[in-house]
Every structure is written in structure tokens, then in C-alpha cells.
Image (cartoon, rainbow, N blue to C red; front, side, top):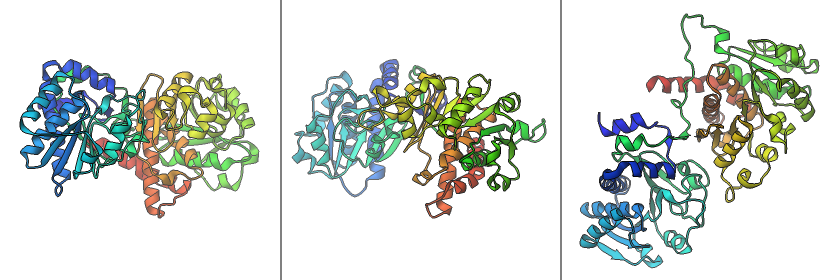
Length: 500
């Protein structure tokens, strides 16, 4: 089996590598590190040549570590291919591999000062200063920031300087890059804002990581795509029926039953076999009656919770705090999967521990901040806290999966698994869209997926439906439009499943 195939077999294609993962792989690679640096530098040169054809003057800025070593090797291969190449060292090389690469370049190539004046002379500047090891505890030196901001075009090796690769924070005044080349798998920062907006187009290249190095890491962070999870496919025979597709139950309020109806529509159109709405009599409006496939239950909630076939519930859409509080007193002692959204999250504002026992929470950023506060790791402001770190902290506090909606959706499990979902559209920012998502999550959970996978699947399906609805509605869909596209979204996920 070829090494590239081994890399894809041993390491999930959806894995996102942290700085710690990379360090473990480097340590386990042992004697292979020399060839890996050579492969990395050559890969950077390959990507540059594939994307850049007209400009042929290149300045490669290098730091003291192995990221700088990659830059020296890249310089060697670009010079071989006829480019006018110079290297500017911010610091002299300190690692053995970087020193070896720099000596080869010193023998064959040109060195210039690390200065703003030099940066402005070249068509392209390559960033080989820090790489993926840059952490949020550091601050990007001003001289590096001004150097890269003087460049006409920028390519980063691994991640732009000043980007914390693990959490996507910007640690200083980071320049805007046109291209980023990374190795084996993407880093979280390539998907997490605000860093993702700085990286430009991200190209991933395999560099021949040995099997023992790939086996050294236990990846916990993933890019959310079909294949990370597998929705059950429709089956012929074997007792396949509406109950095997799953039953989703939803709590409706008296004043805003439309939210529960949108949640129910999300559940039905994403594949639930049966959707039931626990409704007060006051909510028996034409809104429900115009949906003949919906089952409306008028029995008390404590009675409905005894139905063994109704073990997945959505509680919160359209509920006032009083209604949510009254409903939750029955759920707290029931043996069911509970998805907490909207009114139920609002009920627990400032007191998140009262929600212990729920399976999944689906807050947007405002609900998250009201629920957990804004201190320490729960601070969501982009320059003071990481959304991924905050979501994981919330999941661990409540021992529940937490789906944090936003520019990129974060799905965090208390066992440390995190998925980053970027498969969405700003057009989902419409009233009722979150209610639809809660219903989709109910379907995925009722289909038999475990909670984290169900949340991942729901986020992707919701995003795919939003994209399709936006295309049909000129970019401005409403929640009902999103729900109508869920069948097509599920079909797209199933086709991706079959193709793997």
C-alpha cells in the first residue's frame, strides 16, 4: 500500500491537527524528519507553481524553527524552477534540520535583510516564520506584522504568523494572505474565525508521514462532513417502517406554537417517521390543522413521557420561560433524550447546571452567553475567547453535547470530541431557522445515531438545506424554505455516504 493511502487509512480524512498532534507525529517520525522537511518544502514549491504563473520574484521569510526549515527547502526548489528567489531570516535557524537546510541555501542562494523595504520589492512573500506551533499565549511582534503587511501577495506555510493554530484567535495585527499550504490535514484555525478569514485558499498536501507517526495521535477535532457520520439509508424489508425511521416529539407553547410547528417541519422533512407535538388546547390553531401529517397530543406531558416509543424530545422552541420551567420539571426525571433550545435555554440563563441531564443543547451565541456568562473560557468575543474552547467547556460542565451556532457551528462533546461545521450560509440568519435545526437534530437522534454524531449530521443537513433554499429564493429564504429543502439535503448526504 502506498504511503499516501496509509495516511488516509490511519488518520481520519476529517481530522484537524492541533499543534500538540503535530509535535507528537514529529517525535514519532524520528529519522524520517529530514525527508519530511524535504517533502514539505517541495510541496510548498509545487503549490506555489500551480497557483502562480506570471510573477517570478519571491521572498521567503524564515524563522528559527522547522517552519523556517521548510522555507529554506522551498527556496531551493523554486530556484531550481527558474524563479528569482531570496530568503530573509527573522532569526537564525536553531533546530538541526533548519540549520542543515539553511546551509544548503547559503551555498546556492541569496540572503537579504528582514525589512519592510525588502518585503515590498517582491511579487510574492512566503511566510515561514512560526507555523502551526504559534499559540494564543504569544503576541505577534510588530516588526513581523509590518513586514508582512508590506507584501504585495502572501503565502503562509502551515498558518499565517500571528494565528493561533489550535483555536483560530488572532494574536496581533495579522496580514491578509492569499494562499496557505499545510500538510497531512488542516488545522482548526483554517476553519475557525477570525483566523479563517486571514488564510486565503488553503491547500493540503501529503508529505509521506510514516505509519508509526500517524498512529501516535488520537485526534479529537474534526471537519464536519458526511462520512464523519452515516445516516441510516432507506431499506427494503427487514421490518423497515415509520417507527424504525424514528419518532420525534416536540413541546409546544400556547403563545407561539409556530416555532414548534417549524421544528416539527424540520423533523418531518429530514426523515422522521412520526412527529408528535405535545400541545396545550389553546394552541390548536389552523396552523397545526393545516399540517395533516402532524400528530397533536393533548394529554399532560407527564403522561406522554411514559410512551416508550417517544424517547426523543425537543423542548424550547416558542416556549416562554414559565412554560419551559413547567415542562422541564417532568423531563428532569424522565428517561428520554432531550434537545434543549430557545425558551428552555432562556429559562436556565445564569444557572446552566439546572440543565444537567439534557442530551443536546443548541444555543446561538447570545443564548450561550446568557446561559454560561462571559467570564474566562466562556467569553465568546473573538479577541478574548475561543468559541471552540467555550463550547467544549459548556459541554463538559453539563455532560451534554453542545451545538454552538454561528459563523461556523461548533459541535462539542463532553468526551473531548469537537466538530467544526462550515457548511452553511448567512441566509440561515432568519427567524425560525434555529427551530428547524432542532427538529432535524431530533430526527438524526431518533434514527439511532449517538448524540454527537446526530448533532454533527443535523448541522450539515441544515446548512445544505440553507444553501439550496438560498439559491432558489435569490439569497433570501425564510425558515419554511429551508425546511422544504431538507429532503434534498439528506439525499446529498446519502450520496456522499454511498460514494465513500
